[in-house]
Image (cartoon, rainbow, N blue to C red; front, side, top):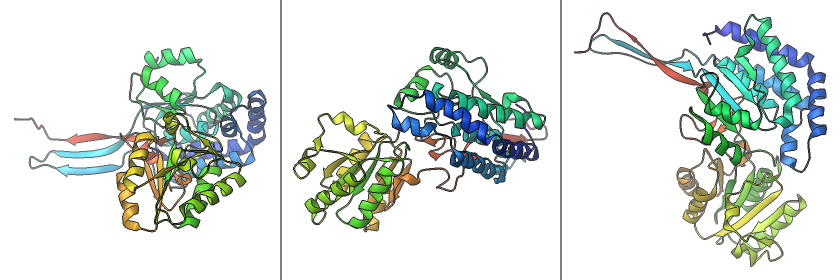
Length: 399
């Protein structure tokens, strides 16, 4: 796809804002068809599927935020002139064609497309069948915005492929793919990694941990735990595991206090062997594999540790490397934790729910990357470009 001028891209986004507002009722009506057809046994997936007035407002805000950001393409990274007068300029450049595969969440059809398009990438959207009607109407909105500004609908396309067809497309794409972003659970990620023939940037599972140090302010700890667990159970930044240092003053009393608080929020509590000695009425885990599990439910596993190092080791072994938090009043201890935990985002005295493009000041996000190449954390506009070297000579030859 050719390079577009910033003004043209912004005009498309301006049109899209107007179209989303105009089609608000139609979008919500189409979404209701998906909601009515959805089997509600998976509450987290259902929550992600819902599009209401608030969600449409958020879609419009996402487009406005990206429109107001600087164009990430053609930005100079470095400029060097060598002793032989060869001028080497490194600049940002589009990836090319990005494929994103995601489950539920029709708002991804807006956020992923607006970011990819502003960064001058073509994007292929493979949404889940549960959001079919929602995604179709949103694609129509995009196509109207593109064509109103003299651009091809090919910039933003929804792929209507079944599982077997998607598998074949990944193995033998009908057009060149430069980057694939699977946004969903472990099964989806493994599916894409198994069949893709180009670069894959993983938006990994959550399974986030919080460690309560013996130097913690208990009031802060409880408030952060409740927020991280209950604010939005369907979020990949929600909390699943809490590790508490047994040397915390009044340890047993505080554990029972935490149990009481969690139960007021209808949180199911699981415990390890040691915590079970204190919270004896709670279900004790039978298989250590549960430490790997992302719950996406009002469920929390509480475990006991002896030291900071033990907590770090457990987190690095079992977590999804998404987000991890420490509650402590010891800043040196906090920095030790944050430097040694292998996660995309690490927190001191704060909820993991802040691992989000909007909350972190990035704006709309394509995904939360748990990979280390080429970026980790929220994938915003500036992260949807690669780089390209421009070398200027005057008949230079290497000798």
